[in-house]
Length: 237
Ligand code: SAH
Image 1 (cartoon, rainbow, N blue to C red):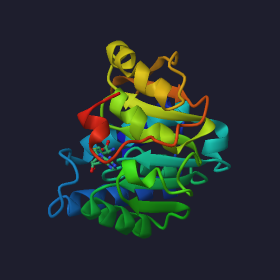
Image 2 (spheres, rainbow, N blue to C red):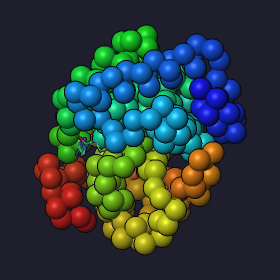
Image 3 (cartoon, protein in one colour):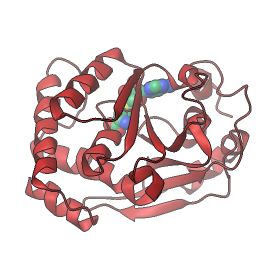
Image 4 (cartoon, rainbow, N blue to C red):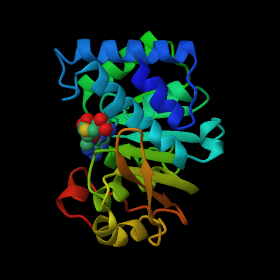
């Protein structure tokens, strides 16, 4: 677990023994389940520590303290096998976390691993963002909405910002070059009530250099968004 412990320390996150144990169990379960459910292409022990755990922990640097201490909720949209939500929850146990994932096989894994890790304060929702955003207990309820590897920013803005409370943030993990993607997303961000002048924030993880795009929610999302399932990606705003 050296890679994880040292990498986390470089992100100013000190993991205690219990947390390291949880990461170890998470990795074991991920690898075991991956044989029957396609969860990830990354299966090496060290690779999981770098590409999944550390890459997820980088997001913490963009999260408000009210989110890290659980006063405001966090939603992970398209969480897959739990990234970035679950590593953040292991490192910051106070986080009040909801994982949203469309594929039932993946949410079955999420429920299993959360139980196995004994994590409290994590909810798993099987569903599509385009539909869940209309549930009153989900819409504009979260201080932070995070997402990794789900869609381009124009599409992602429509999938994430409706969940974000006014005054909250959407944090998307992107590659090194985001200027063009941000420019193309300006319309969608603005239509969802986000501040389109927001910029990417270049962050260096211990293993890679990427960009966290942090978009502030300035005003409420109009009630007609998001559009029906599949439309955001078929016809980006
Ligand atoms: N965030 C994870 C998974 C990325 S793969 C990681 O970084 O490893 C993208 C995931 O998003 C898939 O599991 C897919 O089922 C889910 N997804 C895609 N569109 C979605 C939508 N509209 N609503 C909910 N989940 C969605």
